[in-house]
View 1 (tube, helix red, strand yellow):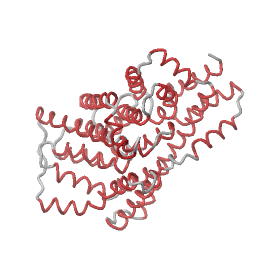
View 2 (cartoon, one colour):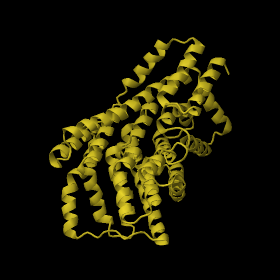
View 3 (cartoon, one colour):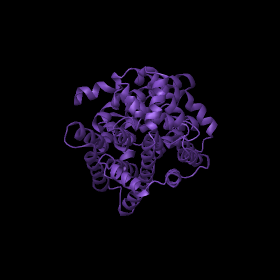
View 4 (tube, one colour):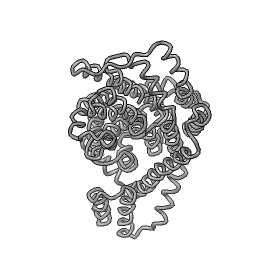
Length: 429
């Protein structure tokens, strides 16, 4: 290995050991390589700008973040929560079922696991505590159900995956429908088992009149994910344009229908969106510079050759890559893995004839499980911080839920039909 590459790898490792901010840390590693190799920094900067800041797919990310912030800030999320409660609240452990289902519904607007956990998840945990649920169970379930968000369409992680691999965003979104529902139902089955064994509080029973009243009030909010998905799959617009439509619709119902967002709230929403987009933009830019350097050093080909030297069986390869991504998820954040490590293996994926849409679903589910695993897991720390539940107790409750998600991952890995059937039926091969 050449000295410039050794210095680059050492600098990159030090970023994590010293716990530096991800964006500036990656930029520092790139700077070390440029200085050691005598490369032209202008060429790298131009390549980054050309490749990423003109990428039409990436434009959808701030639009979905804005939509999630509007829905979280207003009355819409509260009404969606009450609507789910009016359906499932009557059952024993009803609020736990609501926790699962509302994450699936809210996924149709946010596309972000952390947005789910920190937004409507806060409401879920507060109500579960009020009804007598154990705090650590409530926090663990909220973190586990939040993983559904980026699997069920729309999905910010899938948008990032598409920007790296060139896969169809529309097909990726459709491919996430069945896996998202599978994960949601699997967690509901676990809630049923847990409730029978340990006992969960009885939910609140709503009358028919109350249910109809709540449904009427929640109807405009329920239309948001419907409008978004129908506009994409009906061929009316691209996912990026659908994100703009969803954001505009969410803003209109919050301003005019529910009248829960004023000028002050609107300014806060724009500030929050700008901060989140800024963090992602810095990460994307710095990571793309690393990918460019990796391409110059032919690292994808080297890693691909090593992987093919280990096995040429795609099923064994998928097992190995699942293990690799799961371990990475314990250390790195989702954007880092997507933007830096994914490009290293995607060539091998194509050589082995693995469908990019199928692999995309596997990848996203892997990333979501990674968000739950220590020491880096964002969802783990988000839910722990909100509830103040001890981390050790939270992890104990989370382990069986993660086992359920692992089982879903294995089914999705080795039964491609779960991911590929709907896209082939709706959009063709």
